[in-house]
Image (cartoon, rainbow, N blue to C red; front, side, top):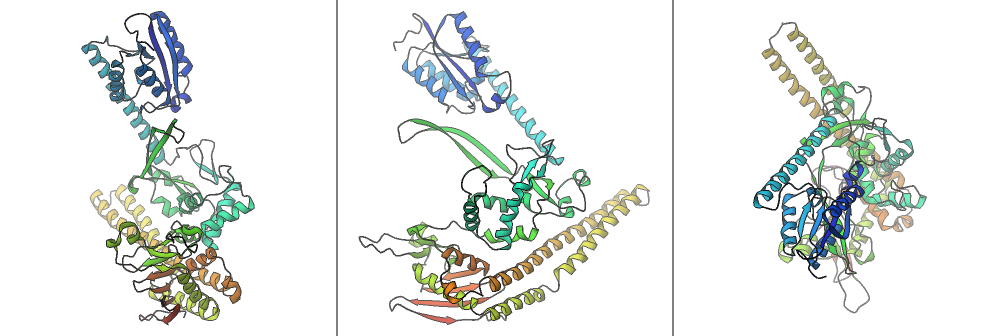
Length: 585
């Protein structure tokens, strides 16, 4: 296209933009912008070459389909002016607007908006630049006021609604808190029962739901392990007693709660999310626009707790489900196989997990599978001295044989597990439920004394300085009681888990015949390993040390296995704990 800038007809491009948020507000539409630009172009005698629109595009970036089209047209030449209704339609960042102006000037094209205040002189450019910075400042102030308003609302115990509520909940009429959606919450409860009470894996839950055709939250065909894991780790489903919630919220919010009820917790201000749009060239050579987002977690002291209705899920289910997935690692599918010791086998030298690896085998069809040190594999031979690769099939066979020997002796297994329950009670000096009742009484007494001291100060019986000292001492007592109650809750859950795992192992697997145990799928074996809290330590000489503990420090069994690969045989030697702890072997 020949350049006719300054001679002949004046050619213009009309540009309109509206962001997603602006689309939701009335009175600022693309059609309204284009209509105003057409009227201006007609009055000024411009020939309109093209009308370019950016719908749902943020002005925080220049990476926009419409803006790229405008820049391409200007670079081709023959464009006198690019018109927009307001200066912030080009960009909300003054620096970007300046770059566009300088880029267009190289092609003898002017960047102009209907609300320009300057006349193109240095003084006019200064005026426009100041106005741009003032507009940017005002937008920042609006954003800050919006943020502070949301934070104040959250501290008042009111939710800031998202596009969709947590699965199993719906919004109340005011959209400032949840109500339980029983139709979906029954699915959530089933997730926690399967993982927290029955010991199923995330993948087992997914396969069960897919097979039964349970509807997914977004209406897709298949469930995702990531979504199930997010459900398990979200505090909105975890039951919190009133006393626990009271420490998280303001006194005003606590006064509106029922002391006899439990609540879930929805967290506000937990994450910071930044998003930008970039353009890239696809495999077909066409430019496409993608949004890149980054999410970072804020410090916990900045989170704001909002009590929501209790989901009706036993707390021990939630805690045990979280513990069950706490050591989850993404299973390697190297070699097209399930690595049943994934996440369980550790390197004795560096402590990191052993990685499933199926190296190329040249022209031979047979593929060998190994567990090898993750540190050495990813960071090089100098990063860890564990040079030994453990043959996967042999290691898995030896470990399962050892576990099978335990399961085939249910009486000894139950006796050992019962002994561990007694050992847990003896080690921690008594019944945690009885101790919890004592600390709850102390907490109640502290609250009662606090009220008495405040009444005495109001009556003038003690000074406010004396009141402050007494309340400070009481607050220390309260904190001590809360710490002890939290520790006792952990001990109580450990005991529950010991009993639950004992029953599941003895009644669920120990009654199976040897042939049935041998035929268990690798994923089912992995489930048994998790119930036993199995750990496998690999040594540079090929020795595997197998230990199983239902809780840290409580030994079930310990055995070392050396694979004599050169002879194709194995030698097993048993080792018991030398610390006087109970053993099931």
